[in-house]
Amino acid sequence: MRTERAGAWLRQGGTMHRIAAVAVPLALAALLAASASAQVKPDADGAFNAGLAHLKDGRPAVALEEFRKAVKVDPKNALYYKGLAVAYAQLADLCADEGCRQDKLKESIAAARKGLELNPLYVDIHNDLGTALLKSGRRDEGKRELMTAFNDATNPTPEVTSRNLGQANFEERNYADAINWFRTSIARNKAYPDPYLGLADSLLATGRQDEALLALEAGVKEVPTHPALLLALGEAYKRAGRLNDARARLEEAARKDPTGAAGRRAQELLKGIPSR
Image 1 (spheres, one colour):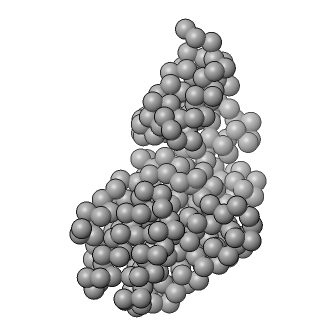
Image 2 (tube, rainbow, N blue to C red; image 1 turned 30 degrees about the vertical axis):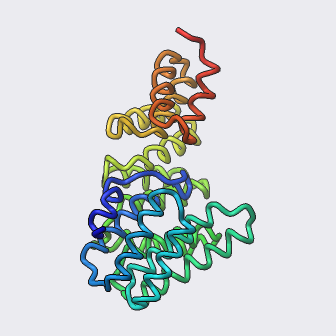
Image 3 (cartoon, rainbow, N blue to C red; image 1 turned 90 degrees about the horizontal axis):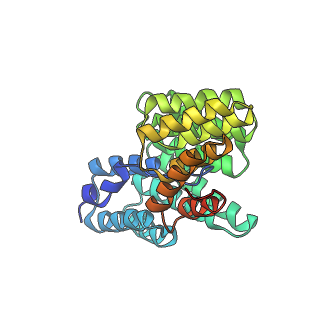
């Protein structure tokens, strides 16, 4: 399978957990874009593409092994270390205890730093490094890495970087800065769903419920089939007492994601809304 075909889904974007969430899909899209032009050995290429496929299907542990194989064949390719960094970061989110989580984040940070050592101009790795540092609690370092990425004109995913800066400020309760960064992210890519969710959360945190609802409506207009956005808009309508609108959006979220987290949450909320 050719690299371009192996990662076509990455270019279409996706979602991640709202905090870690949530930025992985577009970060992976940048990973794929770089891979298209990389000169790699056949065995390394096959292992790398297999790793991408496993990440797509939610198997970061298997993906990690494939990326390790690629590194073993071609240890001078920064792209492969980016793959390792992303896989370790996803594994950290799956850990059941803090010790496991920190160990995986250390590996993610080390892989990202190695990638930058091999190719200092690979700006998108700063996104991965910054996110891993933030998750590990090294927040100032993490935000510096993200700012390095955002300020670089060659950054392939400025919407991801600015969204991550918005999330970092939201977590630190710097809501005005969070709102600014989320809006910057939306301006860079209106089809990227995560910043609409972060913007709505930040507006709600400052008591601006009507503006939060408008932000979610704008998001659903741009990305009408995204389950998490449909769920969030349904919840916002429910808070506003617009039960018919809430029911419609929640039913749509449940249809789009019947077995996923957003769909299951929508189904629970629907139980509390009277039938037509």
